[in-house]
Image (cartoon, rainbow, N blue to C red):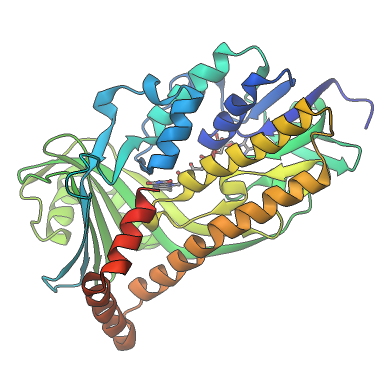
Length: 393
Ligand SMILES: Cc1cc2nc3c(=O)[nH]c(=O)nc-3n(C[C@H](O)[C@H](O)[C@H](O)COP(=O)(O)OP(=O)(O)OC[C@H]3O[C@@H](n4cnc5c(N)ncnc54)[C@H](O)[C@@H]3O)c2cc1C
C-alpha cells in the first residue's frame, strides 16, 4: 500500500455526529487520525439547523458526557421528554409512556442535531491527534489485510492501517470497500419544522399514526414544538415548496387543531426515508460505524443512539489493542465488534421496520392490528414498562 501522500493509523470518512464522536473517543491514544469530510470547514464550525431534534437516551448522554460534549451543549438546547403518547387514527385512545414517578428524571432529552455536531466538532478541533481534511470526498478505496488507501476528490491519497466509514446511510466508502447493504427506499419523506403554538405541550411527545400520514410532535421550549410529518414523497415535496401561509394552514388542518393556533418557528426540512443494514460491518483493514453500518427509520429515534454506542465499542477494541501492542485492525477484534453490533441493534431495527409497515398500511387488517396493539401495550404493563426502560437505557 505504498505511494500514498500521507500515512495515518486511522482514517475516518465522514465528520457527522458519529464520525466526530469516534475521533473524540480515540483522543486518549497516540494514534494518528485523519477525518475526511466532503463539506467545507465553515459548515462544520457553524453547523446549520437541519430540523432534526435528536431524542437522546441516558446511555447516549453518559457517552456524550464522557467525551466532554454534553456540558458543551447549553441548557437551553436540552428539552426534557417527560412522556409520550401514541395515537391511532381518529381514536381518542392513547398508549401512554411516562417518566417513572418520583425519579425526577425524564424519559430522555431532545437536543438539536446541529448542537451535538457543534459540540463534538469543537472538541475534535482542539485535539492534536486528529487532522481534519474538509471539502474532500472519497473517490476510491482499496483495502487488503495489510492496510487501506483512500483517494480523495483532489487526487490526494491517504494510507491507513484502518479506514472507518462514517459517511451516512448511502455510504460511498462502504460501496468502494465492496460491502453490500440492504437498502430500502420507502417512498415517503419526513417534513420537519419548528412551530410556536397556543396549547401547552407539558413536555409530552405525540406520535400520531393517522390515515395516510404520521405526525410526531416533539416538545421543545415552552410553547414550541418540532412537527414531523411523514407523507408520500410527492406530497412532502409539494408542502416543502408552498408559501408559509398555505403551509401553516395545511399543517393546522392536518394536526386537527391539537396544538391550537400555530406560527412558524424555523424553516422547513425534508428527509426522504431510507433504511439500510450493511451485510458486514467490517472488511480487511476497514470498519463501518453510524448510519453507514445501520440506517434506522427515525420513527423510534434510535439511529444516533445506536451509532454512538457502536463507535464507543469499536474505539474500545482499538484502544485495547493499541495499549497491548497488538494490531489495531485485528480481524478477531473487528469480528467481535460486528457480532456485538448485530446483537444489540437487530431487535430494534427489525421491530421498527415491522412497526413502520403496520402503521403505514391502510389495509383493514393492519388498522385492526394497530387498534389491538395499542390496547395490548397499555393493559399489559410489561410491554409499556419494557419500552419505557428501553428509552431510558
Ligand atoms: C428526521 C430525522 C430524525 C432523527 N431523529 C433521531 C433521534 O431522535 N434519535 C436518534 O438517535 N437518531 C435520530 N435520527 C438519526 C440520526 O440523525 C443519524 O443516525 C445520525 O445523524 C447518523 O450520524 P452519522 O455520523 O453516522 O451520519 P451523518 O449524520 O449522515 O453524517 C455523515 C457525514 O459524512 C459526510 N460524507 C458523506 N459522504 C462522504 C464522502 N464520500 N466523503 C466525505 N464525507 C462524506 C457527510 O457530509 C456528513 O457530514 C434521525 C434522523 C432523521 C433523518
